[in-house]
Amino acid sequence: MPDIKPAGQAVSEIGSSDRRRTQRVHIAMPIIVRCRDAKPPFEENTHTVSVNANGCLLRLQAPVVRTQKLLLLNPRTTEELPCTVIFMGKKDGGKTEVGIEFAEASPLFWRISFPPDDWDPSERKRPMTARSSAPVPPKR
Image (cartoon, rainbow, N blue to C red):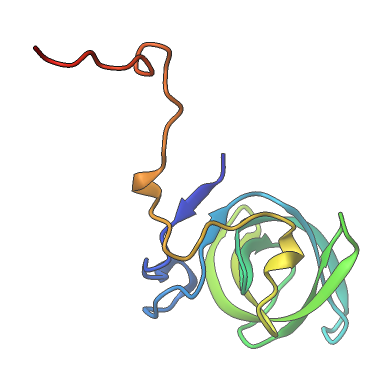
């Protein structure tokens, strides 16, 4: 099950102390990153680290810089959206964590259901076991 962070959590992972605008879902989804303006232009197949309605965090081998314009392609739907690099994070194993922001919010791009804005993961309901689902007899 994807790990979900509450809406009000600070976004230190993507380099800002601002509050998160939408729920972030930690999920590895295949994605293709393209940049036609780079010298040389590149296309890289990778996976997301987390996604939200406004973009994602992913790991790239290609060198990019903050404010660079990219295109994200969802290979499952072939939908492509313009976006901007907004964060450069840790580098590990030849790849760098990169925060990407869509030109406009696009929650449907990911084809997943996001929890409501007021959802608190600590209140998540757990499946009831056979033992706990039996009614408690009244006290006499």
